[in-house]
Image: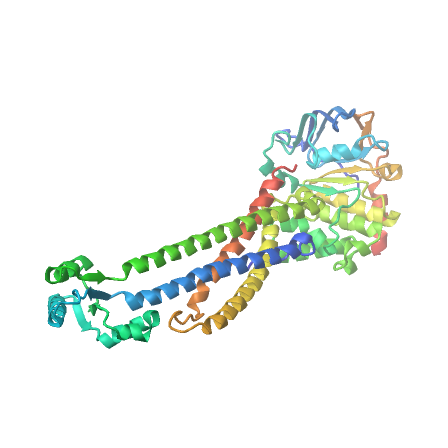
Length: 252
Length: 296
C-alpha cells in the first residue's frame, strides 16, 4: 500500500503557505531567509537539515509561537501575520504540536495532559474520557494514566506529548524529533499513528535528524540548509506493506 | 456547577497562600468599621426614641420679690395654652422636689434646698403623627408667657447627628482604603502568579486556550482563596465584636442601649465579605486578561 498525498483542494488553497518568510532574533543574522512554500491539504513531509538550520524556528512560525520578521505565513487560507490576536486560539486548535522538549505540564497526570487540548476547546467530559483513554492505550500508556510526567521515561513522555498533539484530530500536525527518545518498535508505532491521521486528512510535518526513518518512509523532504528551504523527493519509494507489518508486530 | 479543576498548579504558589490572609484582614477591618457605624446608629436611635415626641417648656421664675401666686398663674396659663393644642397628648408640671433632684448632682443637696428662684418645668408629650410644628407650640406658649423657653432637645441632638455622620464618613473612608488596598494587592499577587506560571500558560496558549480560559482559572483560584479569607475575617470580626459587647455590658446601663448582635446585624458584614470576594475575583480575572494581551 502506497500512501499518496491527496490532491490539492479544488479552490487551490494550500494548507500551509510561506510567502517570502524571513526570521531573525533581535539583531542576529537571518535564521530563515526568504522562504517560499506551499503544501497542499493532506500532505506528509519530513523536515530535515543539520542542527541549527532553523527547523524548530520554522515550526515555531507554523504553530504561532513566533512571528516572521518579514513575509507572511498562511494556514488553511488564513494569513497568520495579519490575524487578530483573538482569532489565534481557533487557528492553534487546528494545529497539533509535538515539542522537542515535550512541554508536558508536570503537575497534571498523563490523562489530564492529553485531555488538555479538548478541555481548552470545552469538549464534554465523557467525550474527553473516551478519546483520551483510547489514544493512551494506542500509544501503550494505559497503565500510566494517573502517573505524573516526572515518573515517566523520556520515551513515555514523548508518547504523552504525541497523544496530546493529536487528541483533537488537528488539521496540521507538527512534530519536532518525535521519535528521538523511543526505540525502533515504538518509533514505528508512532509513525503509524501519524500515517493514520494523515489518511484522515491531516497535514503532517515531522522534523527529524533520523535518516533511517526518512529513508524508510516514502515521503517528500523539506530540506533546510543555509537558511533556505528546498523540497526534495522521497529518499525511497516507501514500501508501506513492509513497515505496516513491522508496526503490527507488537500487537500480534 | 462550576468545576474547580484547574490546569495551572495554583494552590501551591505564594499568591494562593497569601490571598486568604489578605482578604481575612480586610474583611476583619471592614466588619469592624461597618459594625461600629451600625452600633452607633442603634445607640443614637435609642436616644432619639427617648427624646423625640417630648418638649420641655421652661417658665422662668419672676424676681424674688414677686408674688408666689404670680409664678403659679404664669405656669397655669402655659398649661392651659398647651392643653388646648390638638397635638399635645400630655402635659405634666414637674414638682419642685423633682427639679431639686435634677439639680442635686450639680449643686448639692443644700443648694437645691435653698431659696434659689427655680423655674417651673412643664414636660409636654406630643401625640404620634403630630402635625403641630415646634414653632406653633412656641407661639401658643409665648402668647401667654412671653419669656417662656421651649426646648425640643434638637440642638443637643443635632451635635450627635453630626458626630454620627462623622463616624459614617470615617467608615466609608476605611472601606475605600480597604477596597483599594485589596484590589491593588490582588493585582500584584496575580501578576506574580502569572510570571511564575509563564511556561504553563504558554503551553496552554499554544494548544489553543483562550485568554478567558486562563483568566477563569485564576478567578476560580482567587474566589476560593477569598472565600477562605472571608470566613476567617468574619469569624475574627465576630469574636472581636463579641468581646466589645461584653465590655459594653459593664458600662452603666441607660447610657448605652442594649446592643444585640442579631442576625440582621450580620447582614452588613456579610455584604462586605461578598463584595470583597467578588472584587478579588473580578480583579484577578481582569488582571490576567490585560497581562495576557501583551503576550504572543
